[in-house]
Image 1 (cartoon, helix red, strand yellow):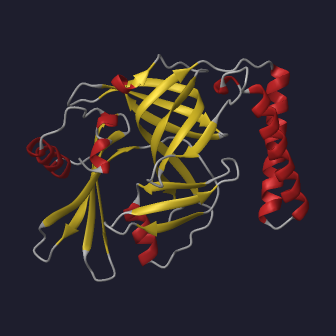
Image 2 (cartoon, one colour):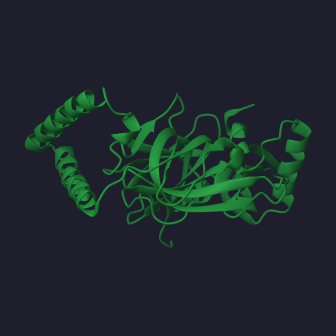
Length: 297
């Protein structure tokens, strides 16, 4: 079972183990697609992407090429969750994967503190922009989403309004320092270093008597060897339960706020421990996807 296939479980296909059934499912996506996208590469090859939803904003995309006789040959497929809302306004760079005609997006968002690497969902739009010589496109926004295979619902850290305002102010000040440090401000770099050392000292003392999750409210960290997988802990802002119309498996779609980054996560109900509710926290690993909101060309 390959990497992409493992995440079919997240969108409600937990019992899809037979290759014959998989081929039948992919054929259905191609023949009865809800959305079809086409473009040409520099060598005049026509590449296509067929997408079909099996629940709200959840589905499978099949990508491949048409030959001279208009016969379609699929190269790969992937499950997806289309996110809602805007996750980032920062500039994005795109790199092609080595194995397939698929792409990874890279976004350096100050809020997170690490480079966000995500699987690009709208690769046809990107290739069209590239062919038209429109790159780089300025003024774009990014909508992220994540597919998860394991997750836990945790209770929130109780804070009063004064503590919330103080945390918000500290985060804003830190963002300004990081922005200045990126421009080479030595004073900002020194201040950030000292703050990190102080934070390490405080947590090292408290961790001896307290649980780590009572000290750490949220985090966003790279996970494993795949560059677009992350371990996350964030507050649940919205929660809804949808049903895969083929398998009738239940899937949670959670909108979470993690390090001030907001994005949607879908997880099969059988893989989520605990009952998700607004205000509680989601802890788990996600395969990060995203699409770029381009202005009209």
